Image 1 (cartoon, one colour):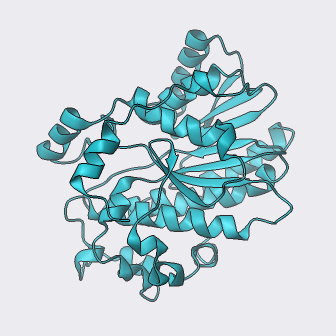
Image 2 (cartoon, rainbow, N blue to C red):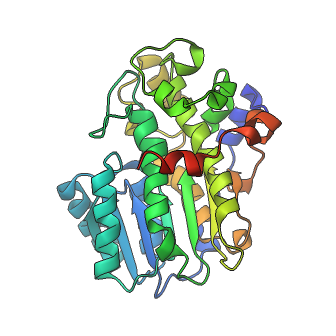
Image 3 (cartoon, rainbow, N blue to C red):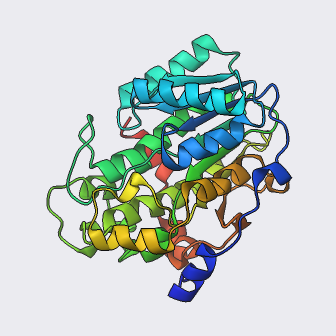
Length: 317
């Protein structure tokens, strides 16, 4: 599928159903949402808290912001089971420690993991492990956390893994670059030798979101047939949030004019996490709370030929 301007604007104007009209109770269930102290993650966490989960973990990089968010959400929603845990998705050691804490302090079953945390960095910056931030956090960190938490998801009866991608994956320049040998190291180089590797506009962010969609599809194919784990990637739409704070005035103005509020955009996250009609529909891409065809590259032979991102990632742990 190609995303045209008219289709993009139509998507932005789509009325999204409020979770209260379809969402089941989450009583007794354990839910984790990353990057939940602000923006889309914070708004989604409020929706989820109103569904009375057995445990709602806000996984945030900043401990104080996480605690403040948990306290506010608990007070506003009346949910007494909101907790703030610390994790830096850009750090392998932090992700590992988070998973180990989950194993120690819980019954070892995870019902819903929402991977919302992400960045949109317009220039070369690196994670603590030395990876370019867009790739290191949006793709590698997200993939790492999913793999660490997979054993706990597989213990649940109808678990869900939700990964925030974006409609910008339709706009990745020269996506065939993903089929280059050792693509992750190419994307980590200080030298940008072609359009695919550049930071022009939000190109590097686009690439990371394409990797999210490919990762979700590929991971879903590795899930044991005995498990009912549902893996989805989604597009929350263009939202007015802090994600574009480091970008140009033009980008930020565009978001202000046609962007959704984070409160509305967060409905797409909750839909992917709890909507009954999505149970068992794994490996799909969602937009405006509907299953939607991803980019032409993702569904092409070249996209399917993209070197296995599961195996590729494990080499770098």
